[in-house]
Image 1 (cartoon, rainbow, N blue to C red):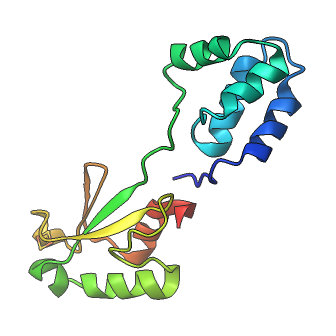
Image 2 (image 1 turned 180 degrees about the horizontal axis):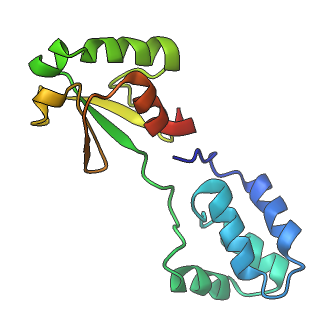
Length: 156
Ligand code: FES
């Protein structure tokens, strides 16, 4: 999963000014902003309007017309790691330790809002194939710390 930095108005301004010479620059700018930050913050509207000599309503209209544009940060990924009995017997505590030691990922730490979270759950019904994890509806068996860290991506 891609890591997106927090919205930065100065960076957004430089993206806008770097593309404002293009014909029909609104869409390339919006795509570039979303690529950079994962969404188009409402603060971008006046920047784009000013750079392209459009009304704010025009810019806002374009953003809402294209459903691909998000106007809020994408939700962070949540990895649910089973720590019930069967998965404990199959090494989930080692996974938790390795996540902390080797990847700096602390299970059940809901710290920074842009970081993926690894949460404890108790039994995902996949006991024979533990340690088990559930990620965005997908059940994963024989999970290890490296796999979880890569699922968390550079968001950690
Ligand atoms: S104990 Fe982990 S899936 Fe059942």
